[in-house]
Image (cartoon, rainbow, N blue to C red):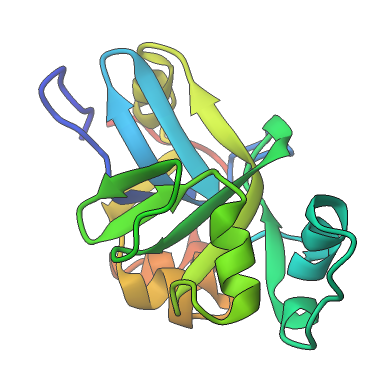
Length: 189
């Protein structure tokens, strides 16, 4: 279904179809933070980038040593836009300096959330990305019409409890789809 101007895909997951050739988005699942007439913004949630929370904290507060837990918090490549900027998607609850409240989730872009996570006072469920994915007005709708994405409502369990390497298949399974059985050729009915 092509979204109309009144339809929003905010709090939905975009699931890349097998024919997605853009290397930034092939085999990705994206949580849509915002979607409207001015475009869309989302975070890739299934591409660990090889960094951990301690790598960020070393830059932000080098005088405080990392905790063992900081070395286990994985960072994700959220998309090709502003890859030097951090985004923390987390359960609603404490509000930090730059927090956008989204349904039952929040998105924070200020370092205070990272410090709280390290200190053990931050949100218990969180996902940290560097960078984001963005679309201009009508661009995402064109990609949906070209059958490059499937959409399904996001679930907290998929975002925070499903291992990253299983998120693509799990998101498609929410729709009853097995991506391994789909052709790379796009069809248009």
